[in-house]
Image 1 (tube, rainbow, N blue to C red):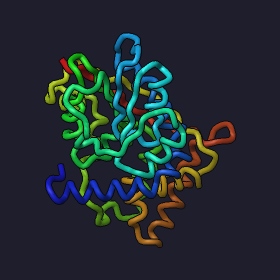
Image 2: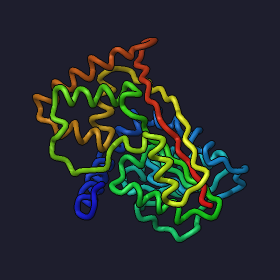
Image 3: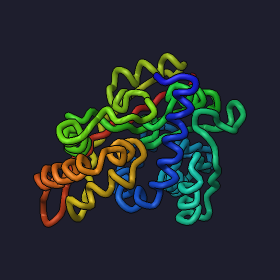
Image 4: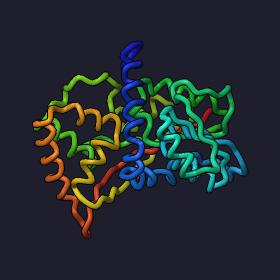
Length: 276
């Protein structure tokens, strides 16, 4: 796990990445990550909200906060990227969106009835700090739920990209070191970490997501320009290597062609716990 200056460098790397990637993320990944929102909110397993408060940590374009509001929650969405918050405010003008850091929340103790993170934890320099912050701002019996990608061998998307970089590029290009990308895709590890931070009734549920895209070039573009961490790895490749990686990715993802479009399995995990 990065500490001190290393954590700070990775934090800045992610922030800059999302400032640049916000529009492309919304264009390509939005239809995919939205699929996890129903299971994510269902995992809160609470009675009908009737205005109960929910904090969506690192809200991105505000998808979770918007669905939470539709279900009756009173949500606040927060993200450290001004570009993401701008999109969220444009898409959902009636919801309260703020700029803030999931690893150091600008809220007092016991401020919310629930908290969520949708595909965020793998992008944090100090994910356990964010889990601790979620616990701190929750009221007693409040629930926390997050989504995360499963291991690359379990789905085509990440496996194809990472194998192409391994074979034709340089997976060791100099980037700020971050925590293991798929650490929380292991249900046992996620349960252990939440329980170690005081959460009880920890549960994990698999979510089978299917990413549909128009072309192999869209798939490559999504990762290159619409993600911070994997995109940063691609953008750091030397141009001749990147060209070979691009060719390999686009060729291999074509195996997912179905019904006139790409249909890419992207399995995810929903993890939840209660503050006793």
